[in-house]
Image (tube, rainbow, N blue to C red; front, side, top):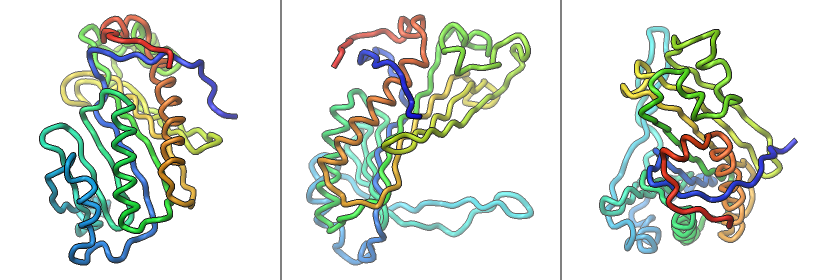
Length: 259
């Protein structure tokens, strides 16, 4: 049964809780990725927004008999960045992603997604095998330093036993991973309380929403944009349903629309 939540107004807050937003498309391996000049057309399409570029390597951590060990670097990729604007594009032989730590409006993300898809199509990529949109919120409040204090800001259905009488304020960390089968993909909700001892010294509530599909289908810009429109609506409704009015008051609603 699909997730059913009431449509929430779009609210834009003065304090942004988003730590990271990621859009990603995976596609069949592009074997010419490492050839000289292979990414020239990709860079030409994106050079105005992302003039800086550098190669990077993805590190893999394997767990052996003696504990975690670093495996040899794998999956070389290039990252293209704006000039201190918090946006970047990464491309490898089997994926392209758009990432930002400076998200403000979905319309901005959507416009940049269209540009990234145009650049990817210019490389000859015609098939996608996975599409995903992920929003990671780290919610903080000066009056929520102990588990029980979050009950005035986060819906009790999410909090569960955290902050209740059974566990009290002894919870250091509580994370739940929920995976929902939807008609247009899979929605993963990873959420929970992260105490000062488990996090960066400041307690926060994590709400990590990842909506994706794993269908092998033609890569068509218009279809992808329609799909992330729907994904964004659901992610937005989950976030707004998860928080309570006192938290909205603290974050400060600077604009509200019903579009």
